[in-house]
Each structure stands twice: as C-alpha cells, then as structure tokens.
Amino acid sequence: VSSGRVRHISRVLVTSVDQPEGGTPSVSGVDLVDGQSVRLDADRVFVGAGGLGSTRIALNSLSAPPRELNLQESQQFLIPFVSRRSAGDPRLQDDFTLNQFNLLLKDDDEAYTTSQVHCYPYNPAIAAALPGWLPPRLSGAVLGRVTAALGYLPSWQSPQLRVELRSRREGMLPEVAVRVASDPSPKMFGSVLRRLSALGPKLDLHPVLPMARRSGPGKSYHFGSTFPHGDRSDALGRIGDFRNVHLIDGSVLPSVPSTTFTLTVMANAHRIASESRYV
Image (tube, rainbow, N blue to C red; front, side, top):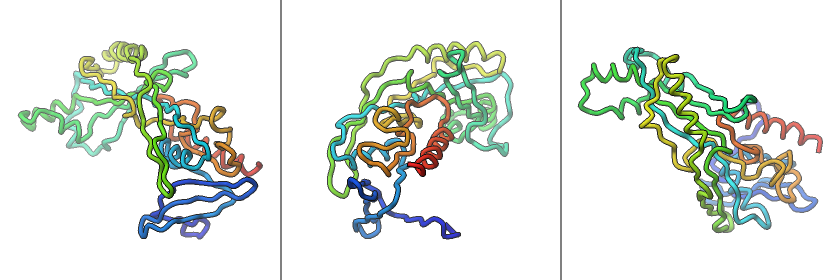
C-alpha cells in the first residue's frame, strides 16, 4: 500500500459480484460511512471473505442461486488433561497463552484421516473457570497441572450442515440460515479418547474423560466447502458463468481436515491467482 502498488479501500461492505456475458467483472457494495452504493470494475476479481462470507456473496451474485448448499466443518471437541508433575504457576511465567503444543492422531496408514488436538497449558479462561473458593496458592498448584485441549475431527467424521438461502434484497447481503442435516456420534471420537488415555502415562498428560465434550454442530472454527472444486466450482474457483471471478478461500476446498488449514487455503489461493493469469 505504501509503495502505491495496492490501493486499499476500507469501510465498504461487498454485497455481490457480477460479470455480464462477454464483459468485465465488477464488485458492488455499500459505503458503511455514508450508505452510498459502490461499484468497482476490474479485469479480474478474487473473493476471499471466508467460508460463509464468500458463500453469501456468491449466492447474491448468481442469477439462479441454489436454495441450499452443503457446508462441511471439522467438528471441535474439548478435553481437559491433568498431570502428576506441576509446571509451576503459569501466571508467573512469561509464556504466550495460545496453544503451545499439538497432538496429531492418525486413524489410517496414510495419515489422511487424523485428529489434531491443540493443547493450552494456560489461558486466563482456565483460571476463571476454577472454583472461587480456592486460595491463591492452591489455585497456582492446580493450574500448574491442568491443560485444556481443543481437538478437531475431519469433516468426513463430523456432523453434516446445510446453508439455506432465505431471502435476497437489492443492495444487501442475503439472509441465510445454517442447519444441521445429520448429527451422528462419530465413532472416531471414541477412538480418539481411548488413544489419548493410552498415551497419558507416557506424556504425563491424563485426559479427564467424563469432562470430554463435543461442541455443537456449527461451533467449529474450521469450515467451508460450500462451492467445492469439481462440484460447484471449477479448479480456479469459478462459479456459474463467471470467467474472471474466483472464490479463493475455504469455500472451495473439497473437504475440511482436522488439521489447521490456513496454509492450505493460502496455497490454494496462490495457485488460483497464479494459474488464472493464463486463462
């Protein structure tokens, strides 16, 4: 931006994209300061508003949008761990509060179906969840032995969701609803718990199984696949009759793995942008 190679336009809510047959694409939106309509013409448009944000823009842009779309997510679960040895009161240590180590459990020899578990030895939310009657010294001793973990299952072992198009209004994003299509209790979750229990003595990280919980469908931070490549979009993320408009985020992934997929989304976006120069 500072070198002038990029023009950044802020405070504009993008509501749709368009490309007339044989014409150039455009982006339509609303200026959030004065409420005026905004239209930007371009040679090529890349839409990266997130798994659900890009879906809403796409549904608002197609001349005959589907009334319903599949939405895949990597279901999230929570497991607390306790350790015999204490790492000391984490509140007195200069550590970051994001996950500090991960466990990756393979469910097959190819490491295709996996469960990734993000372990948080300390976060202020953990301290806030302790009983208020604990004295400070005892609270520190407890926190030094507690690890909270957020784990994920792959989308093919998670509940299936649907995005329903409710209504479209000119100049606004469409109203959508996300509902549960099926919510099976995945067999893989039980396998994950058993394997974590077996690993407990080796890692001094013992899962508190009665407190293990699967989050409700739609709670996960990993979701997308509403316009997956090869189904509702081509390999360049193009939908409908658009030739120079590309979806480039999680909305076009064929599935959602249990692992953190930010780099996968970035690599796919880079591929789409690079290959689109030659079409």
